[in-house]
Length: 627
Image 1 (cartoon, rainbow, N blue to C red):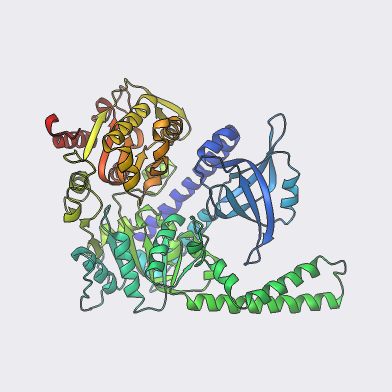
Image 2 (image 1 turned 90 degrees about the horizontal axis):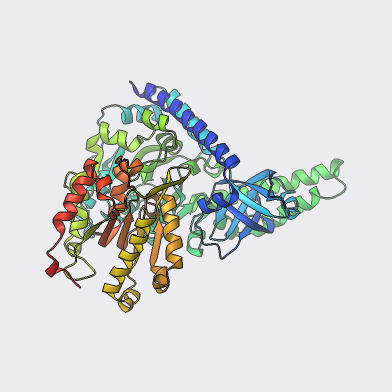
């Protein structure tokens, strides 16, 4: 099929995904109890309402607080739509008629932008208040609009040119430039930066785990800024945007963050559009004019020519100052950073860029990429399509191909535009080797300084512990929630034994950190509860993180422990078949990787059989083991 037909099919798959998400949300909202929603991180209950005020962009916002002792990670973040509810004495839930959008969220405090000025007073009268994530149609609408524009683009329109180039075998244009030297980068990183600079249409920086993709991308952006006044940098998630933004700020780039950061701290907030707006010299005058407008609107005498003339003058003055502030902020920024959906923010209306950088592009749905590409002349993708894929909830849409990313299309159709980073600086060589051989044709090699990095002398880098849990996996709820209590207990006993070998003082002094990963959220929650109850781990809790594979994307730890959960006599392994997730999980470890799984169940799959054989080949004789 041609490019337009492909995108027409993509549009239909997106509609299927939209309907699936909407129906699933409605089903869960109606059938799932509040306690379950709280545990999933989709709900805060109970909460209290703090102050409400107008922010720097003249939007009414309201503070929401939950119990600071709550030890449950939540899914609230900038841009998520929320709705409020109350619970009466009989347990009946009633939803408020108005909701809002998260401006930013911390561990136990959230700021929500609201459109109804009466909402704070209404919520104050509720006897028992909660807030939960609601279905968000905005992103789907933006993706559909972007697809429509791309599908309908004709002739020499830049969108049409890129559409045909990305979806057909092609030879993207190149500039003839003398290669630059970057002595602080390795050979493959230098090559990738030079390829970005030479790309007239598109380039792909393919960064396997630990190969310095972010370092390379930051260098490419910095060099691009020597040639262009301003660039757009996007990623699928707020967290990914925050990370690349921080690295660019540290490099000295003037970054403007559109949308509030996920991790709220002074450094992050200082380069947001809102903070820059507040810090502008004209802001105090603008604030005074806005206050005068609100006072005039609330006055009793809201009729007659005098009222309307005064209101028109005030609004005209406010608009003039807002435009001056906005133009100053945009004019001073060299890097505009946002999520892909955030590229449609009204503050970027009418702005065009010569270059768009999309980080973590292999996690982004193609329609989301087109939201940002509409604003750019050329596109640089960075990511790894052998790691986490985009999230697609509809099996029908997934089978139809919605999960195939635009970056993958470019890799297939224009392989000459791809630069593979080949030297990794994170993992012990034995941890790295299986991933390199299976996913990257053995092309990724280990930097000499991390070849044999380990915590204990003569330790084996990877240990697979056969949980042999006699088919004790349990299905506990929605979204394929599964736990394995036997394996959870074995996970903690394994870690306890390893900590004992290392020694308490060394762990604390050297801050040896640990990540416990499970593909199943239910198992993650079980492991968190068990760690809180286990007195042995109390001194080390600040060094231990427990999360899903998705939660560990982009992170690394000295020690990684993976609980694979599945144990059944049919050999069913569910979404453990998505091998890209296992690639992410295994490659988070710097020095030691423990894998816990039922060998009999898992090794029926070729990947896990080969992995088990590989790990078994690493074992040293018992008299060589460190004790």
